Length: 100
Image (tube, rainbow, N blue to C red; front, side):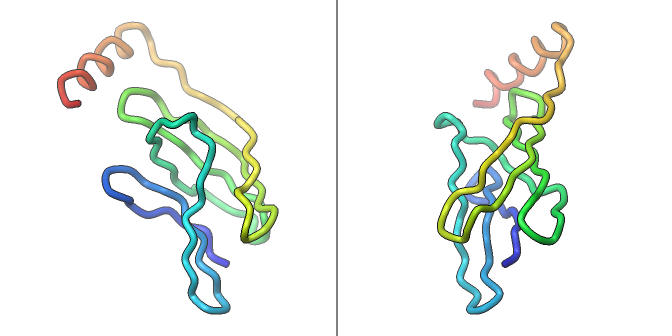
């Protein structure tokens, strides 16, 4: 299979594409109901991958994922999250309130 990301309405989602028949399946990841944008950064060519999730009002977070099968969602392990200074966080929050 191919693991990739693509735009779904206004955010990126992760997709699996089966090489055998071209079937496309969107991966549903537990993100607490928030609409995160997900991006694939790299894979090991087998079952592990590094991905980033982000929102317009928060810095990106890195995860390592493991595919356990084509019919089940991947397992995700949190790796890192960048912290914004209070001033930058205020600016991002203000921008988000204005644009949403």
